[in-house]
Length: 87
Image (cartoon, rainbow, N blue to C red; front, side, top):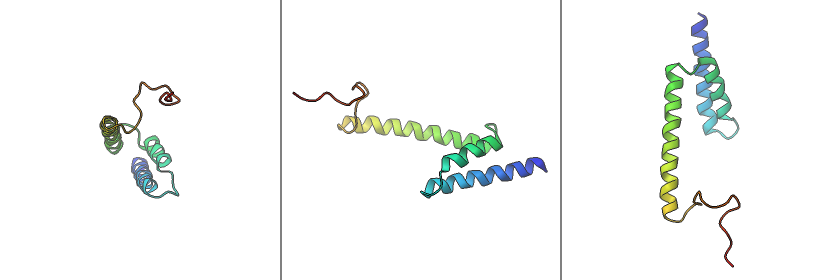
């Protein structure tokens, strides 16, 4: 019974994380962090979510590299203040 209640609470928190990602009033990452805390990182749903986040990270890196080819964005070798100004 305790495990069923824990899973139900974890799934509810994951659902709220998705709703929070879509609505600007709720912070989705808070609910996602709470769901990870309730379900644990070994649960299949959390493993799937973390795998999707890793895929998202790879896609963003690929997109950043492609945009830098067209001169959009800053290369990583610029100093923190941005590119040096032209004289």
